[in-house]
Length: 256
Image 1 (tube, rainbow, N blue to C red):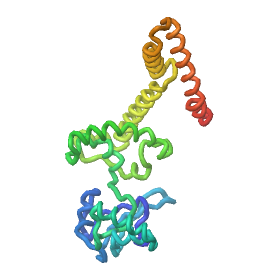
Image 2: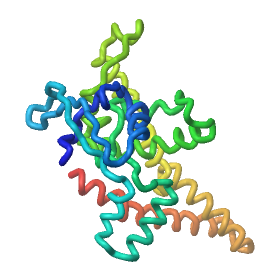
Image 3: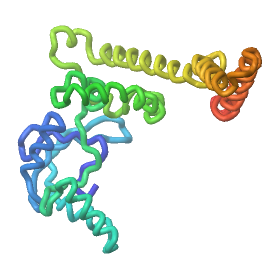
Image 4: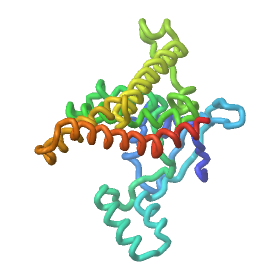
């Protein structure tokens, strides 16, 4: 705030050098030091009007990144010791330039996070892990963004490239296609997750019943098979009731 850069403002240039994405912005920041005075070209965002204004140049004096985090301890010895260790582990040295802006990122971040498989910066193993975990993060996205598939402000920043295929379709069509694919994955993953709940007639319920039956068959090998089957069914039924009380009913109450 002190620098005059507010949430969703777009930084287009650093000392006259264009920074079209976060990587180029980070590269420019790495070449600077604490105390340097630089000129940011910024397109300000008006929360009241819901749109971006006219770009302007803002002079900013960069702070010391290491000192900034140490100052948060307010002189507490234990905090200073722990913070120094953390800063050392991250390789943050004294004099490293710091803008003081929380979570700066590219305007295309919302879509880039779903295109990791095409990013050469990640190894094959990293891509597999990220792609596997992405559906989990997607589950909370609509709740975080008021039912939207991405941050509405960052959505407004997106435009299609001058591609001979994408350009004729337009930004609106591509965003609609993105929304469709997002919700298709989201619904399918949610249904798959629900299907694993240990409740009959879901698959999770049958898995619990079959697993219980297998364990009881070992523990009660001398008992009548019908008795084992009945006991397994009773345990499975009890599990279903518990899950309904603990999980399903509270969710239904929230919806209603």
